[in-house]
Image (cartoon, rainbow, N blue to C red):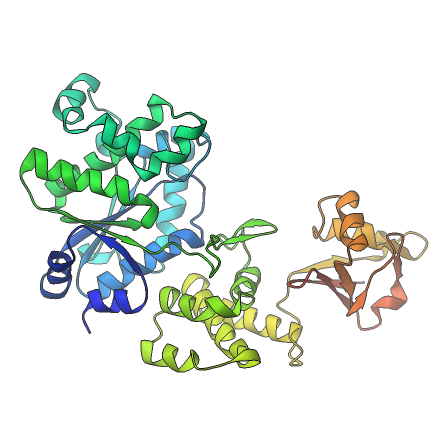
Length: 409
């Protein structure tokens, strides 16, 4: 199976500028392609993970990926799908974020010996002569067509600044520049980037008379169409300091039954034949598929050792009797107790399961807190050292968040 069919069978392909040409390019030629990543935070998140998996599939098929970091476009911020203008970052923040992206991406993409390229569009965007740029590039863009693009529609309702209107032109210029520097013929991206990608393809055709192509990929959404990668704590990050390997594993272990096979296809390298066998599982048997998904994705991002630890910790929660050593945990000492007692509200704040006592009261009142499988019903509940007979307790918040509290000498 060629890489084009592999991507299609995995449900990754959304839209293409020319299916026949792109299929031929991917299956019969070695091509250079790029995907852009704007450094809006100091870590990649699971939404980026789809794009990185596509890059990895393409690289394994012999193609050369360019990971383009937005040192220039990041100074503006992509308005696609946003109801408000993004926070403006300083150049120092952007440079730091790019450095973090590069380290994380290197776990999945081989950048050695020219097998992949890292580029920064700040190298050509930050020192442009504005008048020359407008005369050379701006003349190829119709404002009417730009304003009709999907990426600007939501922003038009709240007010689109001229500052943001430039984003599509900048991204299109990236494709032109990468074509000049690396003979890049293909731009890939999430499906929300379709309008921007079309802009680059058309710029190459109008200005250079060259054929170029664009292809977008499925956004990571649930069966109800909601974006994946959000939890009560916020985004699911690839940085272990922002989302621990255990919480990362738990996120995938707890996804909906309707989403597990789709995620196995998109987010792992497991053979499609194996995934199709897992698709035959029904009801509670699907937990086996969820565990495989969680393990494989955690192994890709955090390595085999962390995946094993996360799996052991998670299995303890699901009652298979394994040790709890790898759960997120907090240590208590005698100093944390007053007259031999500690309030459950104080404990929720100390473990960061609740940001405040007020939030802790709400959780308890709504039946959202259990300790050692016993529901906490009173906001004034307290624990004593006798409750720690086995030297630890397990707090459960909601259905999916678990935390171990150790009593240490």
